[in-house]
Image (cartoon, rainbow, N blue to C red; front, top):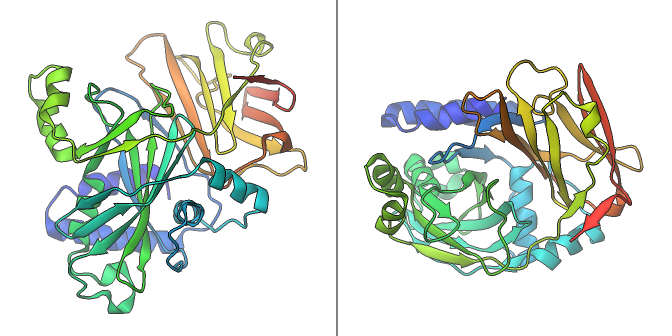
Length: 361
């Protein structure tokens, strides 16, 4: 199933309760049918004021309660991935090294939302959470779908927006993933996956949680950006911990292989993600990076599986426009195991050597 369908379903959830219920049931049925390993590739604009919030209900096996940062990060990525990857000790060390504990508690009408941990590489942020329900009616079956007020729970969880600073008036791109199974204590496990392609987040930066509904109301007004930011109360704050180190891959030899006026300006890779920035041309897809398939190949011949891949652009009708491609990996990758990056479509075949081609920050 395409991510566009998820987005369409979520947007429709703003309608009446009967429609919401029918959409929920359809989404749940389709996700059960979804085969593991399908690539989730989508394009979207990064226009100011747009927050993408897609709710995925994925039936991964319930995990016993574990308060460690490592286990919370593993639980979060297992919820996001179509199938649970088997992690090596080296991969677990990456999660342990860069994951930080959170203790934020937010009171919702349905119960208490507890943020468990955070891990980020400057652009991608994963925040595992649990929701401890106030009313446990219907939880005896162990399924979220058994709860009569499930739609209200989803609305509340996804109704929180994440802002990168006090003066920024637009929330980050956001995905909210939930496990369809309830824990033995009636809690719901899930995670927020956040993305900001405009600003690199660093250790010590502050994330603010605010109401998406109040932001939408303020954004529709004639207020300035600063007035919008100051008019929305802060519900909770998160201090960014240590970031996963990213490394730049040289792009010097790529330009002559692209269309005139287009470019790959920056390639950054971390153990959990890939980011590519450049300039694209409006007309046609010939030799277009923006419309290409992008894969990371390892030295053993395998490819890196991703949880999501997205292309963002603020194309406003100009002949040439900037784009950002971002991919989040299903599991951590040792950078020394990477052979290269392949960018390919019918008219373009780029092979970018990665190992030994780093520009270390």
